[in-house]
Structures are given as C-alpha cells and as structure tokens.
Image (tube, rainbow, N blue to C red; front, side):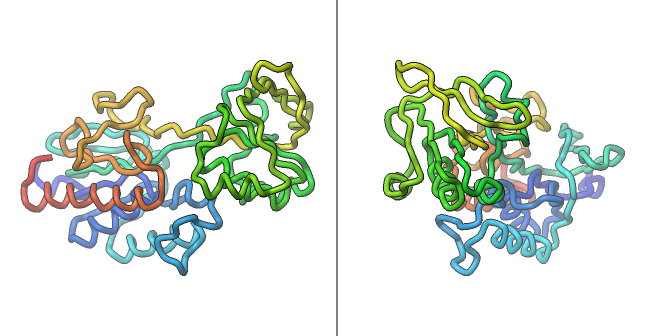
Amino acid sequence: MPNDAFDHDVLVMGAGIAGLAAATACAAAGLRTAVAGTGLFGGLVLNVNDLVEPPRPDQASGADYAATLFGEAMEAGAEPIDGPVATLWRDGAGFAARPEEEPGRVLRARAVICATGASPRPLPVPGAGAFAHRGIAHCADCDGPLHRGRPVVVVGGGDAALQGALTLAAWASEVHVLLRGAAPRARAEFVARAAAEPRIRLHRNAEILRLLGEDGLEAVEVREGAGAPLRIAARAVFPWIGLMPNTAALPAEVTRDADGAVVVDAALRTSLPGLFAAGAVRAGHGGRLRHALHDGEGAARGVIAMLTTGAAA
C-alpha cells in the first residue's frame, strides 16, 4: 500500500509518559504522528503529587510533568486522539486501528508504538468487586484526604505501597500495611521512613481474607502467618500489588509473556513487524519514570530508522 494511503506515518497507542515521549520524538523527526488516549493524558503518574525522581526539578508533580510532555508533543505536531484504541490490526503494509470513542473511524499508519501502560492489579479477595469506589482505592494523594482521622489498609510491600502509606499517614489515624512476606521490597529510603512513622504499622506474612461492611468498607479480616484471623478497622483499602499490562487492543499474534506483557527485543520491536512497545505494557520494563521516558524515546528511534532509512522492523 503506498504511503499516501495511510493517514499517519506512526500511531502511538497511549498518552502516558512513554507514549508522549515517543510521539514528541516521532513528530519532531517530521513523521505524521497521531497519539491516542489524550483525553486523559499522563497515565498513572497523574496519581503522584510528589515525584521521587522528577526528570525536571521545577515540575515535581506528576500532573505538571505530564502537562509539559503533552504540550511538547502537540508543539512538535502530533495529532491528539481523545480516546484509546479499541482494536488494532494489520492493514496491508501497515496497520489499521479503531478509536474507542469514534467506532466509525479507522486510523491507518505505517508503524505503531504501543505504550498503553498497565492498570492496577485487582485485589484477589472474594467479593472485592462490591467495594469498588466504596472502600477500595488506588490513589493516595486523591483519596487520602477523604479518610482524615480514620484507619486505612495498604496491601503490598513495594515502592508504590510504601510511598502510598507514607502519603496516607498525613491524614489517616492509622495505616496498616499488609506484607505478603517477612519484609518490604521497597527501596531502603521508603522502608526507613515507614519504620519511623508512628501511624504506620507493618503486618508481616499477612493475608487479607475478607472485606467487611454494609454501606461501605468498615473492616478487613486478616491472617498473619499461622495465627488466627483478626479484624482490622478500616474505611479504605489501597491495594498496590502489581500491574496488569493493557494489551487487549493488540492482535492475538503479538507475543506476550506469562504475565500478559508484550515481549520485545533490545530495540523494543514486538513479534509483529512494524509494531513497537514501550513502557509498562512491555515485558522487562523497569517501572520508574525514567524507564518510561527511555522506552518512549527508544521506540521512536526504532520507528524513525525503519520509516526514514528502510531499516528492518
């Protein structure tokens, strides 16, 4: 299919940090670039008021930094598409995609960068779905003030869980952190700060058994080690137990790993020629902001080389 049969040279799926970085680089290189998902740009970083490693010291909040990246992508000439891509498929020598919010429209591009990110893994507790928006939350900065003076529970022991617990300690009366193992996995700085915070209590080798409440969450039932179940009063549970890659829109033939993340090579190429993946959607992603930026820029370099010099996809 000739190039003029495509609406764009490159379609970036996802407007998080990796996607915006990729879109900026591709558009700045003179490629006709569209970036889907700009209706809520920024991705999970929007939930962070204080970035641990801000790429730009004058933009320490996730929202501010995302807004700057979005502005740079638009200035470079990228075309914003409000909703995410619902379906992607091969179309001759390139790809075709159907936007979720415009089901009658088909976007055609010579190459695609998938940067759709990941979503918080749901709490694996029977009946947890009934407490969605009624006690289960994922944003400490957003929802913490709603629970001022009340006890809350954090599930997880990684960076996100410990950082969230420290944020929640500014408002909650108690923050119970349920660790699956004997010790947190978070970076030493967060572990030390949590240990020094009197409102944070770590529960080791803990398993959450049930969520309790009628009109909303009132308590959780927990077992620590081989002990008997105990009841912890809580008005909210914040599960930070990992992420699930957002790959539903991709063709079935794209290789994924056991966790559902897209498998890529060193140049961020997927198993489908012309399709690249960047950020939390791909296997082996480092998980930090700088890793997302590096991925977005790296995928863009691969696409630019493929489309401008004829390098193999």
